Length: 120
Image (tube, rainbow, N blue to C red; front, side, top):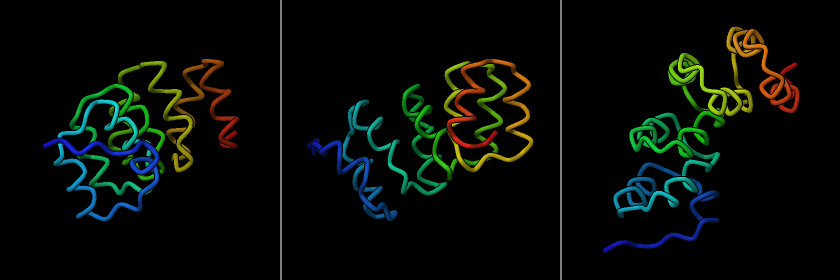
C-alpha cells in the first residue's frame, strides 16, 4: 500500500531515522522523492540513501543541502555537468577548495550562483 505524502510535509518535516525510514519504505513516487530531497533537515545518512535513487532532480536538491558530504560534491564536480555545478554553488557549506574549483570553471551562471550564495 502506497501512502501519499503531502509535498509540504516531505519538504519540511523534522526527520529522525524512524520517520525517514517510514517515508522511504512506502514506495514513494519520483516526485515525492524530489520533494523529500529538498528537506533541509536531512542528515548525511539520509542524503546518501536518497542519492541511491539516481534521480537527477533529487541529486540536484541533495547537492544544495548543507549536509551533503564533500565526497559526493567532489564526485559530482568531476562530471563537469553545468546543472550539478550550479546546484553545488548553492550549497552554503562549501570548502574554499571547492569554491575555487567552481570559480576556475569560469562559467558566469556558476559565478552568479556563488555570488547569490554570498560565497564570493
